[in-house]
Image 1: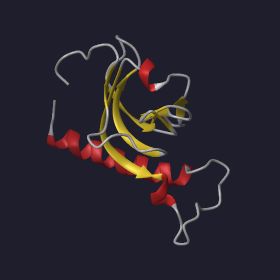
Image 2: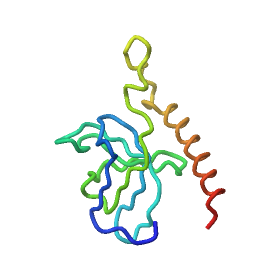
Image 3: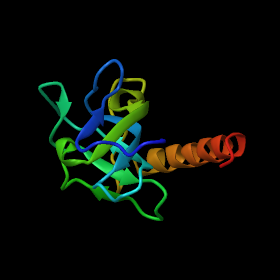
Image 4: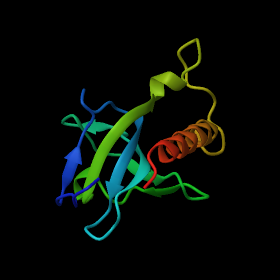
Amino acid sequence: MSSKPKRNTIIPPIRGWKPRTLYLVEVAYFANNPVHRALFYSGFLEDGKPGNYSGVMNYMASCFDVDQDKMLGQMYYVKVICQLAAEADLKTSDGRLPPKPTNPRKEELLKKIEELKALVAKEDESNPV
């Protein structure tokens, strides 16, 4: 990103938000925070926008730091890069969600994180600074 984003810039997915969906996003929490990549879980939608149970996860940290205190509109900058998985993608063949592990969707998220790290590394190799 070449220029500094403006306050409360929210760039949603092209086809709109989907409920209970995981997205790869660029985010800055406040004006001096560098724009970085993170995971965003949309939770429930209110008037077509993420509301309750939405949050940003820093996927580069050794643990999942979920910032659910900041609603989407309180973020300084958010830009959706792509949709990763919807809750429907995680359902079993009989239409039910798999049994909840101790930390719901942890294994799926860990797998996605490894895939994202590989994509970021590949992108960094092809676009050296």
